Amino acid sequence: MPILFDENNSDYEVGLRPAEKVMRLSRLGSFHQSRLSFLRILLRRISAERWVFKRSVFDINVDCSGTAVYTYQLLNRAYSLVAFAHKISDEDRSDRVIATKWDATFVLFDGIPSKMDIDRLRNNVPVQEAGRVSEKEITLSRANKSVRLWDYVVDCLSEGKQPDIQEIEKVGYLMRTTAVYGSGKFGAIDYKEISDRSEFAAPFQAEMLTVYMIRAFVVDLLQHAAKIKNPSKFVNLEPRVSKMLGVGNSTGLGMAPFLINHPQLLNNWINAKETALARIRSLKAPKQKCVDLFKNYIKRSNYLIESWHSQHELQIVKLNELRRDKITLDHHIGKFNFKRPYPFDALYKWAEETLGEEAQELLVSIILEPFGYLIDNLSSEMSENNQFKNKINGSMLISDFLNKTEQHYDFALKINWNNSENNQLAWYISEEKLEPRLGDRYKENGIGSYEQPLQPGRDVAKMYADLLKWQRNKSIAEFLMKHPEHRHIIRRCQIVFTSPYAEIKDNTISRDVIPIDLLRAKLSFFGAFHFDPRSDRWVRINMFKGAPMPETLNEENCDDWTYPEQKSN
Image (cartoon, rainbow, N blue to C red; front, side, top):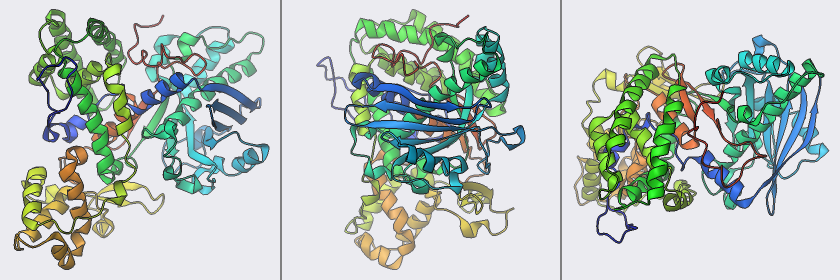
């Protein structure tokens, strides 16, 4: 799969990594954030376009409940975070989707809200799913405190001292969101209505903006709590400390089906990243300043790895392997000759032969870091507004369809679908919260009757078996007249035939599937750090940790923060 790019006028072109390698769950579950992650794209835009940030309302009571409004003013429009702080008991605080109370709730408002808007939102936003918002709202969200760290930092500030950075690093955030809803949920505006706005051209920009503004609110609320506790002695957080606090997130199976349900979008995300990597590997003689930056980021990444902790056995194994591999990588780079032709191609090939997937994918992300001038434009290709407009090509001959299926779904056709272990799990929607769930079809009676179409490998195998019974010169349209049950997978296959990264090349209902691999793949494109699985089905992460606060964000620091220079004392 060659790319039409060569900065050095050479005929040497590195192809994109094959989908058979990239689209395995174990590798997707080893992805790291990169400069093509969505929050990174957002911060570059905010700084380049010089959005103006202000806090217009901060009506918070002595019990730390109340209302706040933060606004980003663009050239021709504005976006406002309307935040509601709540006083709740420890018993009511839960990360589970069935929770009904939260420490804070939010909407991203399209424009600047009036008092009437705020009053309307105050009656609906705090109850989240039980309320309704309008097309003036773009996202709906909620968050809970990390109580131990919150109380510790409030105590420190109220006594006039800064918190210990080591204590900050143990958690990394003061609040964690449990949902950031968008795209029409609960009455909010549908994404297609705002997708033509340049600031929302890249994926999930409204959601990233929401979280970034929540971060500013959380710091303000924390400082307010400290001031209330000791008005005469309190101090605000020093900037070096506040920027080390991100926004946490607890994410479960509700996110997992997204990648399966949006094959064209997934292809565009992966394709952009793989194209970026191939462009850099195709450089015969990279600029020396880029090489120096790369080596600097390699060194700085050690702190990020050291401060990454998890108590889950799956992630502990991966972290131990990553740390061992990072020592090997550092040693290799220390003696590596970057003056050789196509150095990053040689370095990647060495890593692929020597390191585990976690370290390989860390290296990929760091390779991208110094080359913004080559790759940042790829962010414009990561959205997909026409995915659900793809029509089935009924004139395609069965012979051609079978050949392409064998090429793109080789993994699925090799699986023995009569083996119960390969069919053990079933995706379904819970009645209580209408959220995706994963159950054991052999232990949970009747679950198969509610199964969602989230097992494309098995569906392809069934379709393929039926196609083999037909004459090769017949058309797909003729086949579907007799087998309409295969329409969804025929359509999917035709997307995959032209978009090689659209399909996850693993069995998504196997007994051995690890759902958090799906979560991590998506969250890495969001820009998440420090993946901390709490089971194989939900994970905690950190976003914007280390990023400049809105008041200090500029073109010089909007990207150079993801790998901290050193530990702060």
